[in-house]
Length: 439
Ligand code: S3P
Image (cartoon, rainbow, N blue to C red; front, side):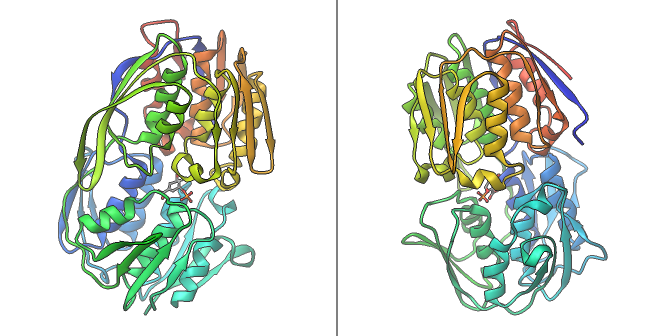
């Protein structure tokens, strides 16, 4: 990975009526949960990205049949809650924290011994946050670096239910414990101080599991069977965010993203943009397999800086890089407070954001868990290294919209982690004006 360079020539407006590839979080969960269902079902709009393909490969190595012959429609033959088989080799989770954390929840309930690893980035990310609750439910788990980093070995078995309060606001940890709860004898409860994305709960409900919301959390009754039901994956709002934010902040831009997921736990960025003064409209709202979907229309204008509080962070966790970029174009200061979780994403994103914005000539400071950006700044042409982080690569590419000259993004291949075809998408959005994208 990380050999390709993406060159983006600016400045340009963003224009178009587009769709984005399927939601990454929902695609992972669709494969994991349908694999545990009783029957065969189809996933439409599955995200064929490196992360989600890693999930398919993982489930195949556990004995699940996945038919990819029609890329528009992935077919999964579920094996039931206890039908997985032991893989002959180590499961490679690649770059995907979601896969590693969620699959450990499933494996905790299986009478199997399984080894998991990941790429250089994933092996640096904390895994103790899921090991701790799974051990307390009865799974045996060993991991490198005093049980904090992958590779990981897990021996699952009979699990006891727990009531668990999340020490960090993480949907991955919540989902891991809920999935383990599916195999426990009794009711497992997860409590969170700040709500995180709830796709796991919604999909479990849709597939007929006994799940209910409780004050401050969610409860799942163990051993409730999952029904095989087709799932339609909406467009990923986190992928759409690159275009939505850039369009919102560049006057004369006009963009509609169709058929995108607008789950309330994922659209913090729209709320922040509205506070910045953006012109955004959510149209044609509907619900598809328990997930809200809509078209999002945005017209560009001059924005103003805002303060983003720690309790808002989970709802914008993946959009902070692109929000930071457009904060350079806002009048006044944007303060993003309590964003410490960014240190343990695909890269240390706090550092990556600071370095990127400094190279672009913006005024940015990072202190502790907080980022402060003052604008508006005239951004300058430069070269930015993605650090193998897909969201940093795509944010750097979007900086081209605001630069008089070329932004070169080194190591741009990592965009395939979540947004295959991003370069074509960007070329199309900027095609009727000055923008030029080359790979
Ligand atoms: C995800 C949850 C988030 C997010 C990640 C996907 C998920 O991570 O950053 O890209 O699918 O559950 P955390 O829940 O660990 O913050």
